[in-house]
Image 1: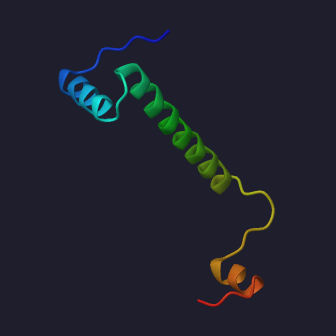
Image 2 (image 1 turned 120 degrees about the horizontal axis):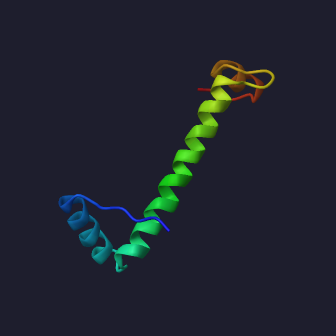
Length: 71
């Protein structure tokens, strides 16, 4: 279990947003965390792949030509 103390202004914002979303604070925080952690994980994977490319990479021009796309 994780327990945190929020600054008062952040807690007020959280309560307001949860109320506007029709959720209690716990539900709202869990939803926000799941979404944001997923985004952070996706970002980490993208950065890793950019820093450690596997195999061939293509420029946008090469992809467009290969896929017979026009700009």
